[in-house]
Length: 201
Ligand SMILES: [Zn+2]
Image (cartoon, rainbow, N blue to C red; front, side, top):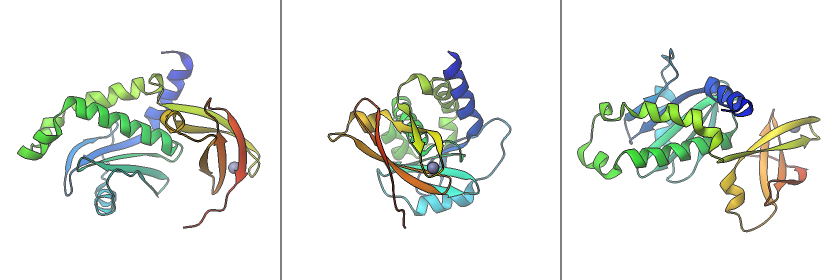
């Protein structure tokens, strides 16, 4: 692992706090860093009631971010400290889903209602993905100068957002430190412009 990748890996590893795969009403797999015994029952109950198929949801609770998506009637949830950007968390979940589907037959899971012991070895896949994440090329970093706060900031975007776009530049809303800007990114991941944006909701 080269020095930059190792630094990013250590940062990600030290900030990820929880991963969960659920059915409508119960957990089938969960991962926590070694030594963590925190419970996420309240958040999971909320997430299971507020999920729409195939759409990423983002929520923030107590300086932590939760990203979740429902796919094939399973709900995948990832939680990190606030410093990890949403696009990183989405990319991580998408890759976990690929790995999960390669490892298990989803139809079997639903037809036999298998116990959570069945998935214990998936822990290893999470650890592997952590180590390999920044070598897969599924996220890219673009440096952005924000005139609002006067800082040069790293914007993380999923590579496929740009690669699969039909229109350029691609507008990306970058929320940070209580405000937001729109960044326009071209097909070569070069910043073409930045505009302030009004946020509501
Ligand atoms: Zn700013």
